View: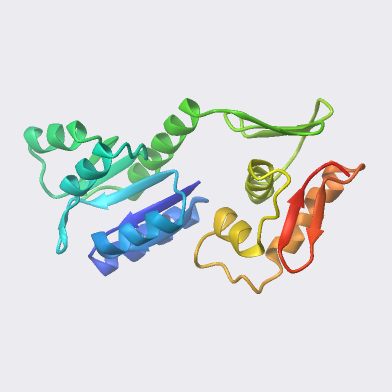
Length: 220
């Protein structure tokens, strides 16, 4: 699951990133609303965490504006404003949750995970190519009816390939989707995952290398 954290306090931003990464999330960060806007234009996230009051503006107004344009992403607001009215306003504009500072990091992680799962449950679909199925609700991959044991990275790479069945997906796109912006596109992490997926999927092969482009999922 990939999360965007927008927080102007550098120490807290780094602490949030470290804690969420340590619990298995892919994390991108922004220090202000323009930075968040740029990240949201480029990447797909399962959840966004916003400090309520930022030097660049009120995140609540920012989320209200995006909701008006049909933006569906789950949002967790962080704030020092703890009145009932503030919490209600946060939820009214489309915030999925509202956490008052100071907070315990395990509670924040639990709330972020809950928001991600809630969103995924509402969007569960099954992606297919030949005899391979990926269930986004159960996070399962099967081939010819046989359930495969896959890691989180293998699942994400396969999900992206299945969503683009027949179209080449670049290395950069796969790495950005399964890891985050901190991943080195020149490393061999993607090659390792692709090799493991090929072994688990067995024959006939489905994942094809597209020279100079990346990888493509298609029947042989």
